[in-house]
Length: 148
Image (cartoon, rainbow, N blue to C red; front, side, top):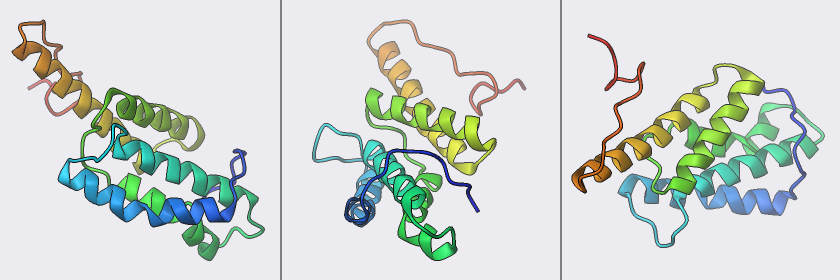
């Protein structure tokens, strides 16, 4: 069970609205389309942060409280397999991964957020190479940058 973290408190209605939008966000990410300039990963991260804030302000620390607050957004982010769609989304994923690593060392959430951000930056590098710019090499330790 996750220990409570001090975050700004969001009301439960805001959390419920965020959780209700997770299915749409996840489907948009799977279809690799968005109806706005905002990256779906940013919405999912915001829902997770709202859920954490609600959990921190809730009286209980049981599974039911987790299921009502940060649990569903955490599941969405942990299972995230699509690249970030924008630079802002990639940066949000990196920030969240860094925060999670600092607080909880080795959660699966960090890995999925790092993959989403890296995939964005790698595709950005490929696009730059297609335009005649210098392409960045894959990072060491990734599947593409692993030593043989």
